[in-house]
Length: 368
Image (cartoon, rainbow, N blue to C red; front, side):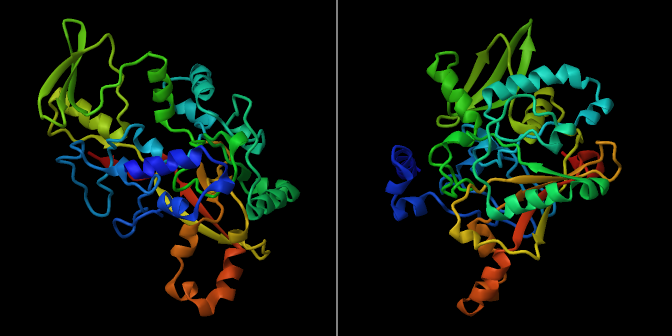
């Protein structure tokens, strides 16, 4: 891990043209499959550190093909490996909530003053307001631009089917992007937002004290005084910490576990909402250039929103990605052989892959 950190620091200090192929390879390990039928684990600069168990997963079990690695111990958590998608909830969603869009909007804006936003004020803004001035995305892949151009040319007919297409909204400092193609394995220039960026800034400003190596297992309040019970991971010794306020941000599963444990509800069955994910490969009759010959950023580039009801509530969102090496690695073996090179190239010139989400209220619930 230290060697990888040195490699990343050296690459960040250099122009892309100065990067060595060995350094690029060292931080570009592709996602690793851990169980059949589930999304593979992304790697961050070649490391699995966002998923390592240092105690936060002790006693956590999963049923069926569910992923057990649901709580991160990493500085910055799973934002080290997220896709950087920053779509808000659609405005009609708030009609079912106990708070209004107008009450939530200023908090969305506050977040976007901290998190860089890349996107465009396009048709997606009707349901998902842009809220702040966004940076223009880096130059899109040929496949992505062709989809957006064809949508614009047939916009009325496509919209009549309840389908809206627009530029992806990303937590990305696009102005500095060199389109090196390493987004999915770790940006050497740290242009993709991670929660660690905010905490680095707060630490540098002396606004927080960072206490690493502690595992919180109970929080509470006694005589009006909030406290946390923690364990030192190195020594095993317990500590009692007090504070004016405690803000819990351990992710859905980690937060649920900490709260239930603190309340002593060890036999309580809790139901959580979750959005079912699906993979959607699509093929076009029109080919672009071989995407392996393009310099691209490899995050989500355009979004398709399917709203067949027309009410802006029961939406399926599909986030489409341009080519990255995972596409080639997951093709059937015969298409990766040398004799199939022409067919494989033809396929890649027509292929886009979407990661889709159904609304949580239309998805099976998760029981904890």
